[in-house]
Length: 279
Image 1 (tube, one colour):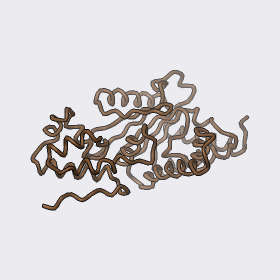
Image 2: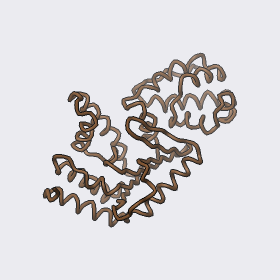
Image 3: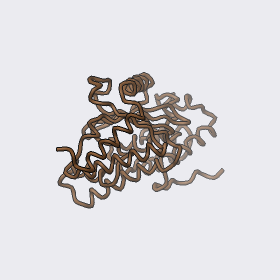
Image 4: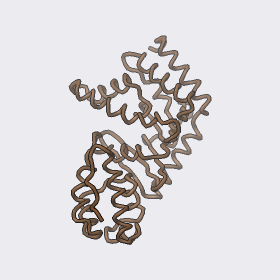
């Protein structure tokens, strides 16, 4: 049987590496749990590697090559799978996002990347890095817009987002940028592409006060959750942790306005900023 092909780093290397892992494991007659045992990981973790929702680190690649007799294939190719155009703390989440069948997100401060317009993304990236060169900002914005292209598909993934009202009120020096971003969100809602709820200030204290939250579901792998902060982020697959984060999101949706009332508020605030009625 011919050896597996070397991976092309430009064509979803993590997903390709996962597919090759599944083929090699099944050829060896091992279940996911049986392969995971000598690696001291669960069968679910092996499933995530195969689905491409988890990155294969070098130490795992070495052991997998030895167990499956793949002649160094995974060691040679896990370097390609590790390459990313995203910051290290966000790489795993961004790549899992591209494979998800459903994404649910709570945004307490800014419009999530998948919903951002080019001017809004540029303003946010410049605020994060005020001394960066124009080339660096251009690359950051381009990468963010490429991520947002997953919403170009009319059905997958399901995207459901809870926006804190603060997101609707945080405008920069040019209110038209926020107005345009809110109009973009409203258009996605009216096209039935996304579900958006606004968590109003009147909700008071709520379950999401600790910060951002993203939940991702997959057709062939366990769900993941992701939380981040200033220059850091963590992806979780522990069932208890994911269940707790899911409950947190459910509580947020219960405290938020209905989708219909949320759309009305988003369009109302957009109109205000279009006429620059805010101080």
